[in-house]
Length: 389
Image (cartoon, rainbow, N blue to C red):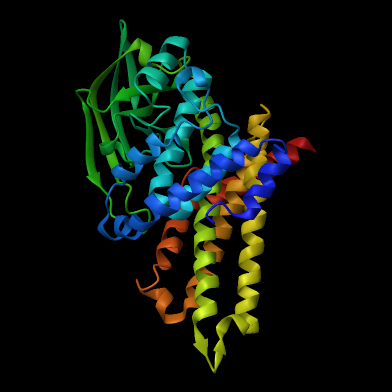
């Protein structure tokens, strides 16, 4: 079953009376296995944006799962969304990544947008459901982790803002209908929801990359790009504050993706080790292979618990900065270790396309960089720990 017992047990901890969630997640697991999994290898090899998968994901309500019903959301607990996202990543990490990015931006709009923006974008334009897509545009050529130093500018002219600047390493701007763009204003860095069809919004060179090949990574150029005053998210000058909240949510969903990728690599390794014969017996009987499988299973379980715990805290409206950072750090680093073991267990085949194992390692590698590098998260975790003391 795609909905593994460990996921079921964790959902029971947080929602012991909610059998309906198990039925829902079983259904989502079957959908991922039957309709998403089979095309994942081709999406990676041919670098295809998973548009068809996202359409089907929209129909199944996966985008909308954790959002309020007033925005056509599913109204489900965040740990249920995390479980669904983990399974989606297990089937096709490329599909899960855009759902993750979309979810964190929608949450930012829900938290900080005014009522008019929320109804217009989340409901009417269908961002919550996935009927429209949105990208996250913070990183610039001058700065990645150092977001305070961004050079893009937004100048208010009457009831409009004029944006100029450039962004780089932005996921799927050319496939999206909107982008959440961060730019400096007279009161500090602010965030704007910009239509990608707006005059002056240009998607520039795409960048070939190691993993997540189904998601375009591109640069954006803003040249006298005008947006209405109502497209300012929240208040002027509070963009970095909003970005922190948005990225904290994103770190939980990235942790779920890391867990799903690791689970896929682990299951392939278990199956291969049972079938592969060497020296007259299955290699699953070899002590060093068992040691690797043991480490993999333990890493995945620990990552899953950290991730769902962070999701539970978010559901309770509590501060998630520490839990989200820990979950993302541990899950992404564990995914690398698990996938590396998977390649080793497969031996020479693990280095080829035969069992499609190295795809998981290549995808997992991004997770230690995007939405907070492991190094930055370690500093943040230490800062939060010292602050508590």
